[in-house]
Image 1: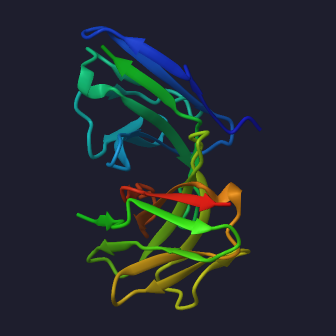
Image 2: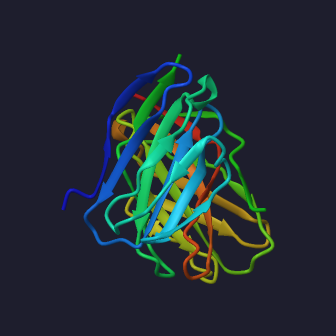
Length: 113
Length: 116
């Protein structure tokens, strides 16, 4: 199993550009989520999905879109990048059982100039 | 809303010694899970240990153990016989115990330095 994979590992954008961060998992997990990590603030939930076709907002959803067309993939779209979106982004997945471990991807470091 | 507080931004310990990282949380739920994650310089988030709130017995995983005080809403991590590989950011996290609710709420982290 490859686990949770994220691409790219690093990305630099200019203000106003759009891009998609990719996340894929091969563990047949129902639950997938996106977090952002900023210095001194821990990880904060952006969006999550409990299955294909179902998504919902987390704590900091503004400026981001998600979709879940397959169980394996959960891309995160930045519609118009802003410097405030400079962060490290983590994708995570797990089974939707009551006692589970969330598996994290290696992260994407995004810089918006 | 649930909150998780880690009041120690940085900690250091001599190699082979014991260190305790603090975590407090706020919730109105009676059933939930608590976690400690380790983030080494590689950035990978690694689960260290977890605790179910309904269990009174403190969880242990080799050199890692927790002191779970439900009434005080405290969940500290004890690392015994510290090793150089333990140097990392440590995050405390909370999750409600409801089917389909896997959202984690994280603390701000404690950076642990191991002194050789």
